[in-house]
Length: 322
Image (cartoon, rainbow, N blue to C red; front, side):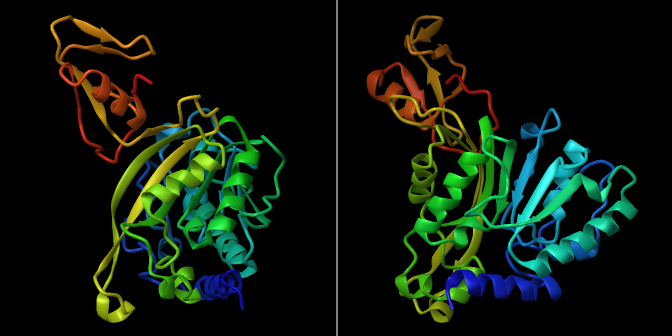
């Protein structure tokens, strides 16, 4: 049995009997005015973070959600689009699609603004998304892509890139590893299905996004997720997994490399009232300006006495000068 078959079997079981404690279901979902979420839907919140960032969801976007789970985030996305077919949710597991459909019917009873037609559930998988080229504004997935082996992850990211409109956004939440996962854990198909052994390091994860063609990546959050202990996982030292929320933009990769925003800022401290690097970055004296990692590095190297660059906060929601 392949790891994808193991994953399908695992989530078919989870669809029929909610696995409380799988991923981060113990955390509270995003609260929105007028949105009620059933206990059953919360129990099936098989994610490691959130992909629902209101600032990314203006103007009633068309959203493609990959891996529907219990339907919670599909419902949250529908909150912003509120129209027939505004959200397309894709899942290869029939039991999961059926469970999500039941949960969304219940949601319609509890939320007067919601109609099940707002979420169109389709059979399909991340490697062959059942939508046309350049047809959606947002692609989202929560704690799914980390399950894939690197070659399959590359396929999934290329598919997401294909279906996004120019300027569209890939919103993801996945575990990442603070050091490479030992091979014996990577090869454990059930641990991989449980989002515990397929995680890449941060550097590998971001490189996969850039290789797929995304020219700008913004980190929304990075926080502890799970600790793999020595006794249970037969490793020499504990291995921390982190949860990474990111937004990747379908824009051209600049000639000098992609823009990766991790919450760094640049602060001009020279004698003039402002600093202009003649590359689109104007810094007022003493005022922190959000910059991408690439720009922070360049400014620090070229003006070490005049510009202070701060460390990554692993949180960025716009406002940069790049």
